Each structure stands twice: as C-alpha cells, then as structure tokens.
Length: 330
Image (tube, rainbow, N blue to C red; front, side, top):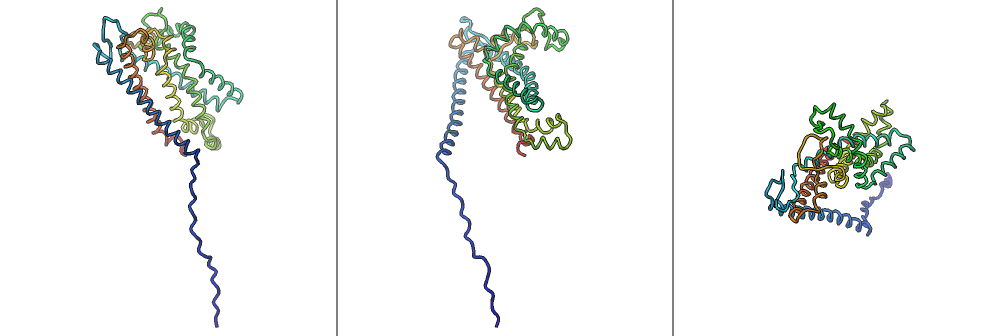
C-alpha cells in the first residue's frame, strides 16, 4: 500500500495592498501658493501689456509723422520727438557691445574661481563679484561720467587710427567727448559682468564630479576637462545667465542717461556723440512731455517690452534645443 506525501506547496498569498498617498496640509498649501504665484505673474504681465498697448495706440493715432523715424503730434507744443528706429538701434548696439565684452570675461572668471584659483583666492574674488552686483546703477553712472568717459579718449583715438577703415570705429571729430554708444556698451558690460559671473559660477559648480574625474582618468588635461565635460553640461545655464545680463542691459536707465549724449541721429560711427536708448529717452523726456508726449514715450516702452519678450523667448528656444546635448539629463 503506497502512501501519498503531504503537499508542501506554500499557501496562496494575498496581493500586496497599494500604499496610500497621504497629502499633508503643508503640501497642499505650498502647491496652491505656487500655482497662485504663477497665475498672478501672468496676470501682471498681461496687465502691463494691455496698459502699454492702450496708451501706445492713443499716441500713434495722434501722430503726424512717422513712428519709425520722427514721432510728432503737435509741432506747436514742441513735444519730445524721437524715432523708434534710432532708439531700437541704440539699445541693440549698446547691448551687443556689452554682451560681446562681458560674456567671455564672466565665463572666464567663473571657470577661474571654480577650477583654477586656490580656495581662498577664489572665495575672495567671488566676494568682490558679489559686491559689484550690489552696487546701484546711479553709482555706475557717476563713475562712468567722472572716470570712464575722460579716460576713453585715448582708446577712441587708437581705434580711430587703426580701425577707422571699418567705418564702425571711424571718429568724425577727434576732439569730441567720448559720450557715445561705445562708451555706454563698455559701462553696461561692467554692470552686467557680476550677474553673468555669479549665475555661471553656480551652474558650473553643479557639473557632476564623476564626469570630470572620468575625463582626468582618461588622460585629459584640465582645459580638455573643461571643454569636454564642464562647458557642455553648463551651456544652458550660461545661456540663461547671459540672458539675465542682456535683460539688464536692455532696460538700464540711469547709468546710460548719465553717460550718453543722446540725439535723434542714426549713425554707424560708434565713437561719435549721439544715439539713444529706449529707457534713456523715456527718463530724459518724461518730465517735460505733454500728455500725448507721455503716451508716445509709453509707445516706445511697448517696443522695448516686445523686444525683451522676443529675446527671452529666443533664449528659451535655444536652451530647449541644447538641453539634450548639455549632459544635464545623463
């Protein structure tokens, strides 16, 4: 008679219960506040756009000239006349000069602080950069008018002598004061340098240490590590830092108004007196303008508002296209 062995199969187990997601009151409050802040920001931006558009349309309807060249609505009241093309040109040129000078220097300072300088030296330089970022605009303007302008005469004459053939650096009057768009661009470069440096430094510090150590293990030099591991990872952050600096350069008012001798002429000679920017023109003419004159100045502010939105939108597109190659998602 054969005996059957008892079954040793384990008893069936119940399916695991799904863990409950408990949302704490603090999380709900924080999420609501974050959403509300984002919506409030959109509302404020829309309100600004509506205000500028309404006042701009009111001024353009009264215009008897050309909004791009000479904006005028009543010659008997001698209103502040301007051409949006002149102001856009001056704003763009001074900002481009500032970016060309400031961005390479700022990135170089950030790399020196994070990868080359000893800890104490890097900390001291970072502290000085932070102090420069906290200096008010009017202080930069006074320094530019009292120190920078008198000391740029020699540089202007040198550029005129050796690079005057480019037309850009051709100085019509060698004895004229260097209160030009070129001087404004140098001053703006000094002003935006701390902003770009600080943000770039923090972005570079976020580069994974393993990426750099792997490159060093393969025999790369310090510069090759920076070129192949650091800069590709930090490219998007450096672009964002540059856009922050560009935003300040586009909208800077008091420093530009203190240094620039503005006029309504559109000239390719960057070393000649003249030119103008949107913000400088608004602050210079707003006090003496009539009601329609203020609307016209607000119309120029609308153009600056649109330019700023376009620049920031283009920067976001560039960052989005470069994100997959930056190494940030690795």
